[in-house]
Structure formats: structure tokens, C-alpha cells
Length: 406
Image 1 (tube, rainbow, N blue to C red):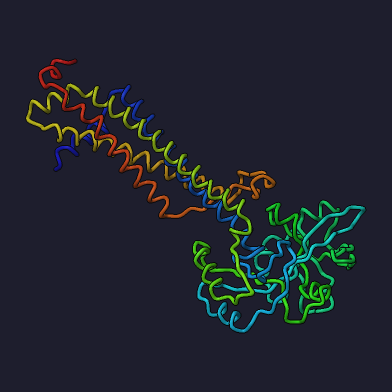
Image 2 (cartoon, one colour; image 1 turned 180 degrees about the vertical axis):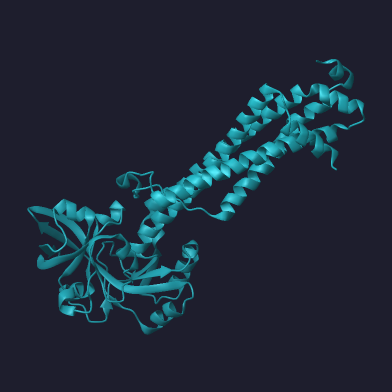
């Protein structure tokens, strides 16, 4: 049997010293809370970033293609998507789907209220999966009935509240041109994305409305929105799409379109790193304190072991085994607490947020096994590495003085 491990287990399990027991329990609690906070911090930040990205991506796509000109407004110049570009997008393994769109500034007038908006026109190829998840009233536009689809509209809950509108209501929208062009629409659905920059800026309607108002040709569009399979590759995929475009077209990613949101999300990573370092320091300090107290209380035992011929490293191993045992208990409890709270929040959404400030109505959780494993491994490695320093105090203990010490 391993001599060091045997002694370590005896003093860890059958210790009767009440003071060291108290310190050990405090150390275990410190490690437990530190690991639980780290697990929840990483899970919340990852969940938060994923949810916000999905909100923006779901409504505006990952990459947009528009005509290359000096037009900086939301109303893009028309172009025809040629066969080569269409084929290139279809054959691109990183592209999930794409669809045409166009936008046009408009003014909504209803119930003696007026609201400026951007009318976003889409056609039957538009992927409604994301919008369906966020519809709180009504349904989507029915493109199977071309006549009815010309009068149907989806608006955000933000706009509906501002104009005191509900599903089924009719109202007049004035499109901004040299002369205002009024059109009557019926609200078939109300959605709530939760990102104010999107909710207050857009309504969804039929692309053919914009084509008629602008006298475009049947095959002309304002742009193409592209959804890619792996958002982590967005920079490379966006660059690859741009390289294959004709000279009259340009492309830009959603990160370029909404730099403020994605810069803010990037700063969250810095906050997470700072929090992880602070929690790791808390756990290390607790374990260092506990180990020092255990060494001081076991001075007599250290002297006895040295007098029997035990080396400094052998005795250090005893206390490091003991510390590893305590860290293991702390990690076990920390995983139970952190993962338990994480799964509980996933199931109940009991911890809520102010959606107007955070774009989400609840604290999102995104747990990954690799993240939890990495946090456990790093905690063990850092703690045991740092604990080697206080264990060097053992080499300073004199056997003769230690045996006399009571």
C-alpha cells in the first residue's frame, strides 16, 4: 500500500481536531462555491451570446448581398441575381439557405399615432422557422394566395403597442417616395424578437409590393440574405462569398451591420475571464489556508515521521494527498450545485431579466460537457500547483523540536 496515501486518508477521515475540521469545511465550501459560480458564469455568458446572435441572425441573416453603390440608406438599389452567383451560393457547403429581400422606408398611421418604419419585403422562399418561434399572436403571411399576400403584414410587438394595434386590424402605411404612396394593410401576425433595434425598425411584408412601388422588373431584388451553417466561420465565409460576386455587387456580414451588438457581446468574454480568475483565487486562498493550518496542527506528527526516516517530499505528499481529497469533495459538491442550478434555470426560467435592457426576458443557460470538464481540471491543477508552496514549510520543521512540541 502507498504509505503517503494511507497516512493522508487516516488524517483526512479520522481527524478529531475540531478547529482544523472547521477550516477544512470552510475550504471545501469555498471550492464548491467557486466552481459553481464558474460553471454558471460560463454557461450564462455562452447562453446569452448564443441567444442574442440567434435573434439578430434569425431576422437579418448572416451575410447580405446588395448592389455596390454609394447608397447608405435602408432602401437598396435593385439588381438581378445572375445564374453564376445563384449557382455559387447553392453549391457553397457553408451556406444553409438564402432568399431575396428588399426594404423601403414607410410611415405607419393608426389610432392617431404615427411611426416611422422600414418595410422589409420577402417572397415565398423566405424561411419562417425563426419568426414562428417568436410570434405571440396570429400567423405568417400566406403566399399561396398571391392577392391576399399583397395586403398581409407582420409587425413587432413594440410597434403594435406604440400604435395600439392587434392582430386582424387594418391600417394605412405611407411609403416614402417623391410623393407619398398610401397602401392599406391587415396585420396577420405580431412577433417579439426582443432586440429593440430590430423590433422598432422593421415590419415584414410581400416583396412584390416594393417591386410595384419602385417599378422594378419582375426579376429585380434589393438584396439577398444568407444563412450559414457555422456562425464561427462567418468571417471566412463572408469573405469567400464576396470573392465570388460580380463587380456590381458587395456583401457584408451581420457583424458589420450591427457592430455595436457584437462588440458588446465580445466584451462579455472579458468579464467572464475576470470572474473566473477571481473565483479561482478564492478557491486557492481557501485551500492554502486550510493546508497551512493542517501542517501547523500536525507539527508533532511531521517530527515523528522525520525521526523514522521519512523524507520531506514523502511528508509533503501526505498533505498534498489530503488537500487533493478535500478539493475533490469541493469539486463534487460544486458540480452538483452549479449543474443543478443550471438545469433548473433551463427548465423553469425562474431567474428573469429586463428584456428592454438585456434583449432577453430570462437568464439563458448553455451547458457544455467540455466546459465543465475544463473548469474542473484547471481548478485541480492550479490548486495543487499552488499548494506545493505552503507544503514547503514541512522542510523547515526540525524533528527534535517538533517531538517536544505539544
